Image 1 (cartoon, rainbow, N blue to C red):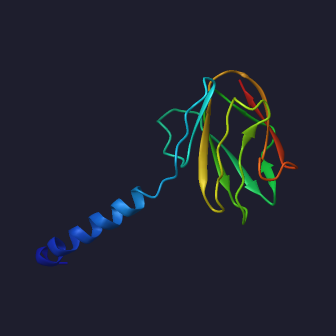
Image 2: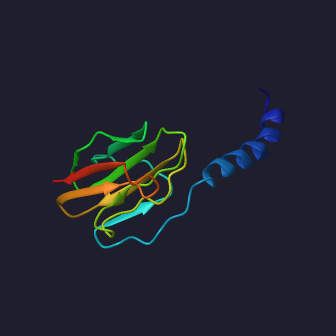
Length: 129
């Protein structure tokens, strides 16, 4: 591609990149032991990131053991789900649309039972070391 064509393509590329970056979900205020965001972001180098996958109305793996930090939640089902702590305050991913990801951040060691607010028959366990 010559420089003239490249110069004319740059504005279109910038708009496309801005649209992709701006498509994140909403964020929520974080409780003391955890926080959540509408879209997962890259992990910091050396961080322990584990992934909970939602597929066929089930959380996998469960239980999942992690060091304190971020846990990515990937929804591979055809409907929205949540990852909500049974205690009502430790974490809540909010609604995760089909094909989307979110994350929760857990800071306090312990065993956390969780469920899907939309589908209460879905249950899992998160163990923070």
